[in-house]
Amino acid sequence: MGEGAAMLTGGFYEWRKSDKQPFAVSLGNRVPMLMAGLWDVWKNPAEGQWLRSCTIITTDADELIAPIHNCMPVILDSDDWPVRRGPGEPQSAQGDAQAVPE
Image 1 (cartoon, rainbow, N blue to C red):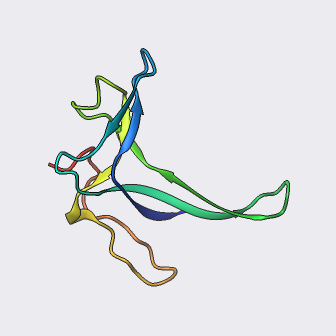
Image 2: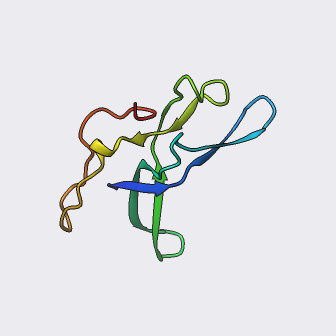
């Protein structure tokens, strides 16, 4: 089972489905955003080597992204940022996941 992750980024790209046009998306104030994610370490059964992998959690698009795409990353509000804990302790964001902080 994976662990919670918070991925710091300056933005993300979303491609409009109708014509594959890419759009760069960032917060209006240009500060970094924190996306909700998961990570895990697992053993590849075919090759026997350990791999690290991660994924970004998505949600339904908000009203700004909906004309471009039907989903988007979960962006954590600074009040919901995970608290760093010791090894083995869960990291979790408090509150409901929402598309973009208000």
